[in-house]
Amino acid sequence: MANYWLMKSEPDEVSIDDLARAPKQTVPWTGVRNYQARNFMRDAMAVGDGVLFYHSSCAEPGIAGLATVASGAYPDPTQFDTASKYHDPASKPDAPRWLHVDVKLQRKTRLLPLREMRTLPQLQSMRVLQPGNRLSITPVTPEEWQAVLALLD
Image (cartoon, rainbow, N blue to C red; front, side):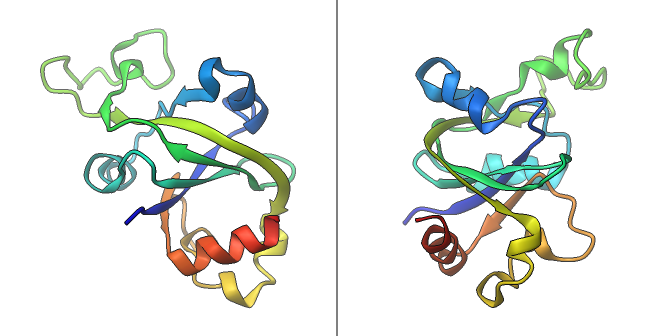
């Protein structure tokens, strides 16, 4: 059985349009520097899992498209790149601290804004809507997934 995820990306880093233009409409989900989010990728994500592609830290945050997990977790090369803002000098190639997965576009959707999501009773349990939630990757229940799909169709 597939799992479902909400994955946040700042549109100036990687937007849904960038994903649509990427080779094979697939991008590596680099730059995650939170242990819980890393652990979701490492321990719980599987190829084929559903992804709600969420634009964050922008004028109108919200779900901008649907994607799938396209690879298992593997070392994030930005942790070793001294020119990257995601460089981690404590992480070593023989013991990488940070992982990432590849994400493949399924389809761009209308923007489902965060402000609209907050008004919908069927989405009130979503972790992205909980006070203090700052995780870039959060699990989505099958019921939440279906509710979002119904809103996007």
